[in-house]
Picture 1 (cartoon, rainbow, N blue to C red):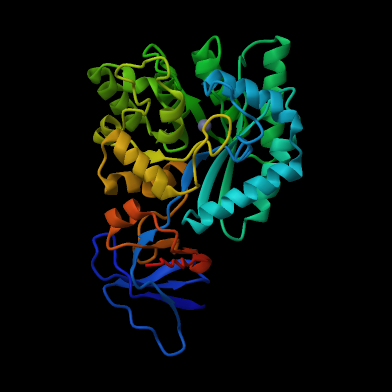
Picture 2 (picture 1 turned 135 degrees about the horizontal axis):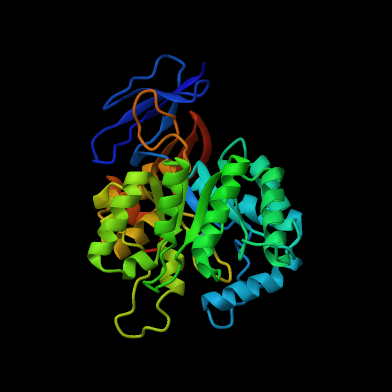
Length: 410
Ligand SMILES: [Zn+2]
């Protein structure tokens, strides 16, 4: 067993906090205000840094990342983003997808994330380059990051027509090829409830979890989220189902939000809030009192729902911004959902990890030694500054270290 001591840092509260981690078992061995290294024991210098549980990102599109410079969205509308992406998808080859994905995963790792979940858009005419590319990327980064893949195929999915049969075949072959979960975007199909039911039935048959783009619309009449709650209860899948976006919930009356949130907590559906892409794409036709488009996070937290948050689209036709940084996501979530910095940070650490079904999120003895140390005087300061100066450990091993050199001419 090799152990190392993280010395000289502070905890989220700004008080001295040191750790001993074990890279054989991959867990935290000792935690407290002072951990004295044994003779010869490796020391990781965390002076000036806040020592935090490593974040995770539960909702990405690594197949699309970093394509906005060549796949231009002429209107910045969601419908055109879909059109531009679909029109450009056959330009991709698997190696190119893999290289973009690996570069972005390494940005995430350097910024502190040791677990990521990405959707992969596929369809009957998409070809399999996006899938092959992301499966290769997942293998290539296995020594530094856990990557989960979700197959995302647009409906309609029910019936014996050529379209639904072909769409279901794409989902099936992606699961056979090794993706971890079934995804989808049932709100954009003609009969959303029916597509939700088909996706749950396929997941049950194939023994994988479910993570759906859910009600990504300001239309308050969209109710896929409630259908997901019913299906989760019916299959007994509490803790294995994630609803991403849930934009329409933010537009529904308060008492309805509270009732839906209570139901999600009861049956165990996690919600992933996606402030960056929702801020960019939603509300473009509401110039007065423009809605934020971010789900009803406070209401969900009050009800005890597991809430995670992610970066979603990074520099692609769906969103021009994004630097693969959990501090960026936490900042956007705090500002748009009126969360405290600590609440927003939980959404990109413990909440994200619970939604993904992976461990970590707290720095207790015996917990996974997935750690981010970042410059700052406490958590709030570290989030606000988002310094590039960071040290990242996964299962007790240092997987990334970034130092910053700045010179100012006076
Ligand atoms: Zn998405």
